[in-house]
Length: 258
Ligand code: DBV
Image (tube, rainbow, N blue to C red; front, side, top):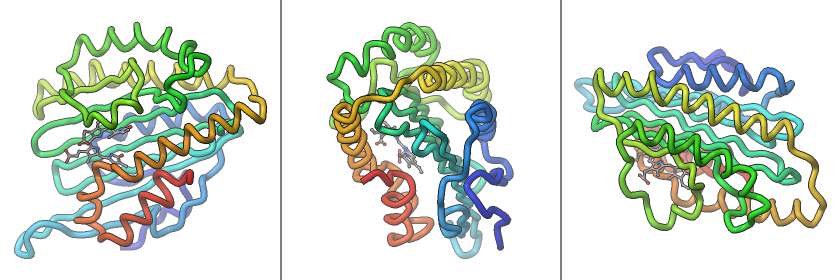
């Protein structure tokens, strides 16, 4: 089936995609920053395939949304719906390295065994107080307020810990009514608060010196390298769309700062 998406800013058209509210909020919030499309080839703007048994094949849809602005090198969202249940939103916003800004990362995943929620303003230079203090001072109280209302996400891979801030909102929520209530009453307002705080930081950020910009760039590349290497969705994406397409998607679209 032909997709009518021609560039990364064209609206996402995946019916019953569970996370639409969050991308809509992101699009609205960015409208004040004069966004332009992020260059993404058609092969990666839209993709569909079948999975499950040949007697009862199910459809999987993936669409990629993206933009860039004066201070944001790339904001992109991988939007996936596989069958009735499996629904993924992987949103990462990467500022240009000549601003002292964190990444915005949201990994919202629904699988048959439940919802996984990972939301954070992730540091590019975790051990640099000039990079972290002005963010964490405000993020920590925000985080405690929301995390206290959610079930814990449990352990995360030890090697991944260094990429998260103390404001990492992390939860595993059961499917069903209770879960839906937590998503609409806690995750939605938490996401809006984290996103607005991030965009306030973007608005107020000043251009850095060459030397510091270089340091930021190395920090950003280290993060991208880790995420591209350890992407927890690699197996799923390969199953749906094959190894070649998946490796190109992960390394040339999702985590393309090399
Ligand atoms: N995660 C991605 C991309 C996805 C995606 C591009 C296109 O980086 C989805 C989709 N994340 C995704 C899926 C799962 C997770 C898990 C499908 C479930 C995997 C499974 O259970 O089979 C935050 N995402 C996770 C986990 C964490 C994150 C901590 C659980 C641990 C895991 O399964 O590895 N954000 C994610 C993460 C980092 C980050 C791993 C690392 C720095 O910043």
